[in-house]
Image (cartoon, rainbow, N blue to C red; front, side, top):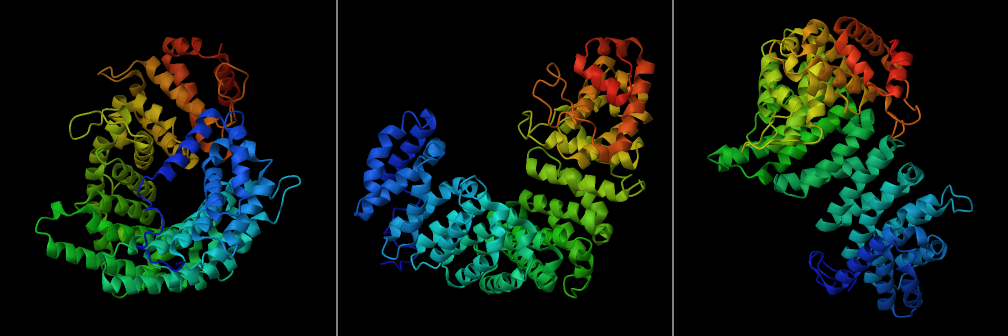
Length: 593
């Protein structure tokens, strides 16, 4: 029957390894390994064509599966055949008499060829209406009575949205009408896939999900669903993707989310409160709490963070408008930030960082506990938590501006936690060295922001980590964060110029420090440069114009270092590649020989 339940075994179990799946995976591997065009397609196309034209739907289903399996390895070589194959796939998906299995595999294969379809819109001789036809086909089949077809179509819609991105915007109105209907009619599994696809759509089209009255179509329905599920069981696992989806939409809807912001905020706080109470009641030792029990808390915190990002400074007035949760919100944030489960703290410090940026008054009264907890959470044993805690401290530093008073009691602790991230001697619980991508860069940003508040916080200990700080700054990709790191570095080095030579303990030579600093500075000019920018044709980019004040600071610093270091500078200069010498002359005004 088409109208099967979620537990129906008519299809293969998704988690079961069958001969059919093994064959498809083997085709995928062969196509990828041998490049498809020369070695695979000549043998595949004849039987594939015969089966695609067969009146037997099961033979067509097998051929469509094979076509999808070779999409990555053979995709470019199949381009000449796609103008004929793609309409065939759409027809198999939409045909009223096609088997559910054919509809499922046609949807999956269409998703696999999403990039080709999207590429036709602007291609010479392409089909500008193809995106519209694919969206129409997916939307039409989202209402299929068969649960497996619902899952396949909705999943492929998410894949297609990731490829189409802004090309999807003209069709959002009709698509969300179908989505809202599906929210009302889908079973649990189909709804989970639908919520995931909605999150992908929001990420791909951005603020378009908040325009033209769209939120009024779907946000109230999502809130009703949340209320119904949470009332029955606040630990219901299907609440998690619902909150995640609502949070991602809140970010992009922005201020247009305000009609539902208070209800959303209070439901998130209610979820946190209910789960905290139940965990405290059921668990004698909170250190033994099962991480899964805190998943609703984590999702509710993340949703609250989405409200902060979406509403910006208006979030503070939202909290104040809640008579029940407004007065207790700071203590709720504090409780999450010192929770026994690392995942809760990880989400809490993401929230703390955004609150510091947009609504700092809300955490002012609990700032000491938050700073202390963030320092304790900067352990590489939990890299994501460590990153979020370091980032939150950095955002608090930015908010402090030139007022060091709130940070003074905690600056030594911050320094002790960040230095191991910069010098590479962070260790896990077993004493093994920990090197996690992003930790050093985040540490460099936090150190820079701390030094921007007061260079004295870091200047005395600068020799211990100067080289590591420079190495880490060179890897920061975001220009604003890199700017903060460099500004703090310059201020700290100005406060302790002797640290360039390694200090009294001889932590490094002046040559090592200069080399690290110069490479960090050169990294500003590598965006868009050739891979062999140091030794090949000169291709360094100019210093970003929006950071002209920093450029002036670096010019002055380099001039002073050249003047004060004498032979140490001369030795480094002799080893500079010609392109770096040219860069130093043209961008930094240094006369190099």
